Length: 258
Ligand code: ADP
Image 1 (cartoon, protein in one colour):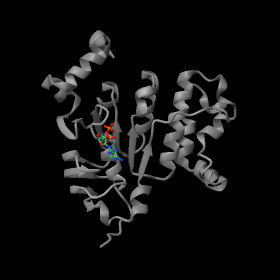
Image 2: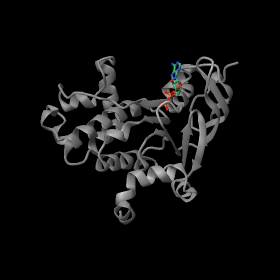
Image 3: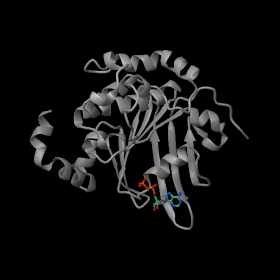
Image 4: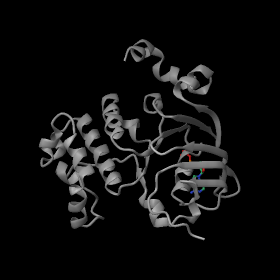
């Protein structure tokens, strides 16, 4: 039967979830619990199953073994429209500034103009534009050609987030969004996101992107091989620690003083 959920809080539970597209399991016994407002980070090499987890949460593939619950309800019992409206998915967008910055912050052409206007009036969207650093809000009517790389990145992510947030989603999935960003831009985004009480799933490769997560899981070939907070994973001196050393090895001193 279907369960009517009017307002999703954004708690996500995976209980021993296994999944195969064809014959071979690509997720094996995955469990995690993300409480409303918390952040789960997923790391792992290409093909380890990160995107598959995201696909399952949005119910793009079935069937799985085990349980996937949102707010304690089996997601198969949640109306699909309600489920997806509550999941804001931000892909790693490559995106050109042929239009004005204002156009770029607005939505894709697939959305009707009146919807855009309504959306942009939305306080949360406006808040985002208002909070753009470096006076970006004053150039929203201009073409983006003169922007620096960092400014373009900020606007790219801002646009994606505005798109995500106008739907009042409670769950935000950032799919490898920050890989292409410079550290300063990444910090800006993390700060901007703090204002919203969203449950976040971050797929990332950089330790700097995941270190503040409530839980980090490392996937390998569909299995969780390490899990915990940044500090705990470092103390394990395992794979996460290796990644950390690869990324920060030469800069440990800087990292620790920031
Ligand atoms: P990641 O996001 O970590 O790169 P994926 O979840 O995309 O990993 O992939 C996990 C495994 O599932 C890989 O072996 C991949 O080839 C396979 N896979 C992904 N999508 C499909 C699909 N639509 N059909 C069949 N196999 C798939």
